[in-house]
Image (tube, rainbow, N blue to C red; front, side, top):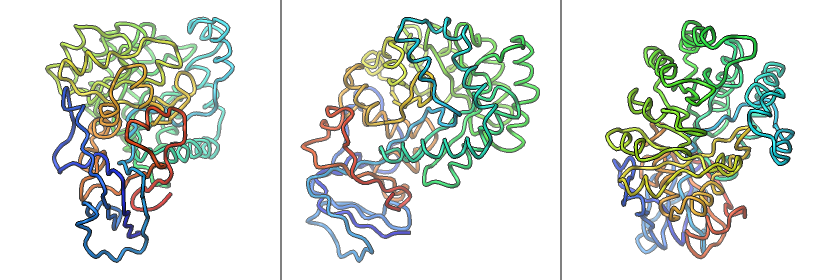
Length: 410
């Protein structure tokens, strides 16, 4: 493990005492930044930090001068579909020309298109393609990520996806949490009730037998899975040790938020279509509302009502939803920009949402999401910048110069 001292940091961002696990409401606007700072990383963890004038004698094997630059904790991306066989740009062109989601699906597109492609792709090819995406998100500052299944839709292929996601966690510096999402769509040629029976009776026990998933997810949406079906599936998952997180309220007021609250989900993700009722339900829960601004942007959907959620004293997380159909980008700096531009979040709120709160959504709050002694040495150093607001302001620009994950320079 490298012993790294970063000196002359213009601003060390998200410095927190141990025990601050998430921020909500007005506290989301508070982002602690230590100016003119140093940061010492050793044995893969954050050793110490402080002001330059208080820097003790440290004999580090590597020193980095961060004059004019900021150092942030790495992003935690709590919602992705990183393992998939192929892109779907042909559907993108159909959308541009005015085709609806239903029309694309009728022509063999959508989730079933990804499932068909995945079923025809070998394990090695799937891994190599996922590895390229893993490297891509690390380069844009992500250090921990959730990866879902859901493009297999058969027991064999769902298991293959989860094994590959676990392998990404074992063979790269990324911290990976896995989610079983067999209930992503209904495969062609099988009726809904039979497929749900397959998920409950066969898939969930098989996933649990290999300990392949930390979590269970369901696409609770009109035309996919109802509230009752979602509840049945996640309650079965809970019996096998998988905690729920739910695709909720993306296209319609689907009841996904309410099911998430009822079943004690860690998070409800999407939230493009929520109102007062859903916000009230979330108020009395520990569920993390999670916005996926990349998907809203790509599909031209309403953006989640961040201001209403924050004004209701709720926390909010931001993730990428990296997937081939509705969010083909895992670039977290871009997600932070979209949150500021389209959801009217302040830079401080958006950065808290993409680090501390996403860490909580993945139960990584004790190891990731902030600059705290003892946490994993996952940080990135920016290009020279005038202030933290420059990051979301300069959307699409290269703002990250160097990435350090688990104490190693990537």
